[in-house]
Structures are given as structure tokens and as C-alpha cells.
Length: 176
Image 1: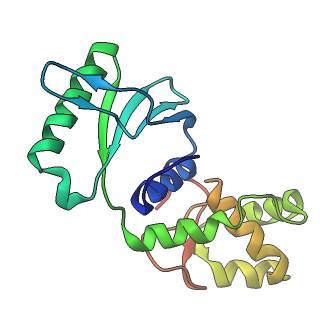
Image 2: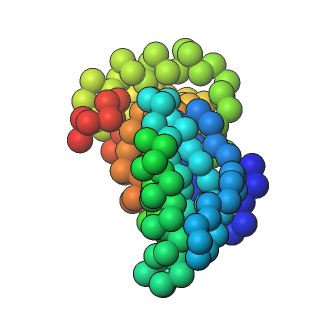
């Protein structure tokens, strides 16, 4: 995947984590009218078949007149195609740190199925990571499974808060 800035890389990380992106094209085309031309950063197709023209800009530049005009051009193009337009800016830094940590657990860890079943049995109610590890034992084997399941959104925690043994883990997205 090609990106031009750290901000774009964090947005791509976020989009990968939410798990609904089925296709993504970087700098997909040139939009132009009589006055200007603009190349959006991405076009994103989601699993529900919605398509988004995405621009990524630091928040301090979002209201800059040239960018406002570029975004208007992208919005017009998106509407004409039945798509939407979205501007992404900085994400919560703790959220980004946590996603970068979880990214290391993207691949299946040792005995995933066995430990996932045990974790799901223990998590009848939300509990701290430490409580979960104490109930299951073998923390050196269970912890990677928990982080893998968090990355793949099969377990949940507050991603805007610093990870610790006290972080609460739960099974259903809307549970807390």
C-alpha cells in the first residue's frame, strides 16, 4: 500500500482495523473542473458496497481555501456517482499507538482456536485483562490470543485508553 505521510499511514491502519474495507485504491484519479484539479488520496469500497472518496489532511489545513475547494470538487464527484466523500484528520494518538501494537498480533498465534474458546467461556461478563489471564492461566500463551482477537474485532476494549493489565475486555461490540 502506498501512502505519502504518517497521517495517511495511520488512516490506513484504522481502515484495516475496522475490517469493512474490501478494496482501496490510492490516488485513484484526477478530478477537475474549469478552475482546478484534485487527486483524492483514496477511494475505499466497504463490504456493504458503499464507496468513499477519501481525503487525508491535518486538521489545521482542512479549512484552508484551496483544500475546501478540493473537497467540494470531491464531494460533487462522489454525489454524482452515488458515493460519499470523507475527510480524515488526525486520530487520537493513544488509539493509533494501540492499533500499532495490535498490528503485531494480526497473524494467528499458537493454539488460537483452543484459547479463543476458553476466553469466550470466561468472558460471560466483561473483565480486566489480568482477571482473564488469572482465570485461564498460561498468560504467555493467552495474552497473544487476546491481542489477536482485539485486532480482528472478536474481542473489544477501549482503544482510546492506554493498554494495561487493568483494561476491561468484552465480547460484543455494544456490550460496554
